[in-house]
Length: 199
Ligand code: ZN
Image 1 (tube, rainbow, N blue to C red):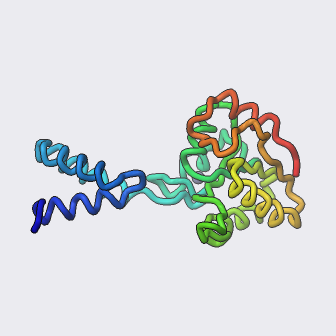
Image 2 (tube, rainbow, N blue to C red):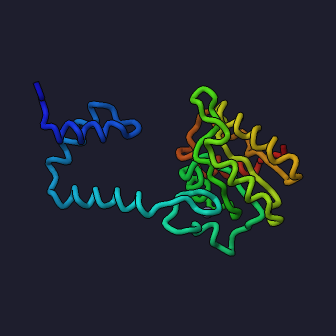
Image 3 (tube, helix red, strand yellow):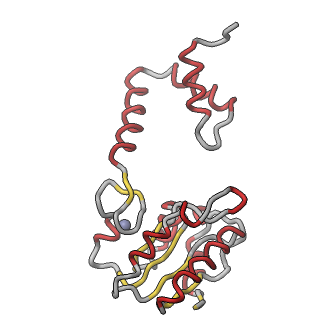
């Protein structure tokens, strides 16, 4: 016996595939959407498909952008000799909010996690190494989180960069273990950046 219409079922299954959305929440969202005016749902659907179609990875730093090269990489006001390596675009946003960092970034889109089967080739490391071939780069600041995976990734990156002779530094451990950078206040982030040490 079917409790829902087939289409509601499909909608709930699709919503349930999103991170952090369980079966219950998927059901609640589906019902909410069915109670909205058609125009509102169409506008949501359009935002989804258009963002997916137009948002891409910056050719240089791999963050998400609408352009070929993101505004930070395109800016001449930024110091292109300093690259801060972060886990994801949300961490980039957190450092940007401090307003204290004037270098550029490199977004890995993940961390190495043997437990989850995520290896070095699954994150944007190859792209980082390609950027380092430019003479312009003088320092790489590794700002992955202080989780086990974040530390493993930091050490892995350091080993890769060491032969190039480029200065590699690690942000200070002011960032709490397992802390999501997005929720850490700007002063703590700024201190972590200022207190970085050479590896
Ligand atoms: Zn960029």
